[in-house]
Length: 204
Image (cartoon, rainbow, N blue to C red; front, side, top):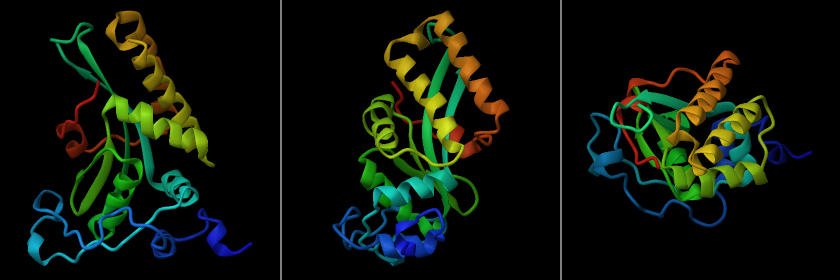
């Protein structure tokens, strides 16, 4: 088998070079704006993003290693149940690989690229409709190969429960909490960074 056919064995940087062939998913020649520029950098002096097309099989391998499916339960006294359920899909990379996060955003057609911590940035999707319409169908069509697939299936259940309004009553919240706790016990998600917790995106 040619190495290009096995994204799980390829180093991320090598895979990015191979993935850069094909149609444009990050506008060619588009400079990184001030909002997305690495800290301390003049956005006018940043290199322009290279044209990049990410193949589905490469995204699966990349997310198997670098992605997170997380369910947050935050206290919100004004909410009907006193809590806010916040599922999210995220990928974190060092700022030197910022272009791959923008390419993921272009591929899925949703989400944000935001500072994470230190020199790292995150591609993050929190808006419920985007999770339901873009992220869930993609990973159903292109299944994850590692234990990350277990986390995805539990996370997907929460996303679908919310579509049915389960997060709006106490019984549903209790069921979602149980799923969240099972994910945490299995070690399927590291604790989100402060930047992830404090930078909101519209959810439901």
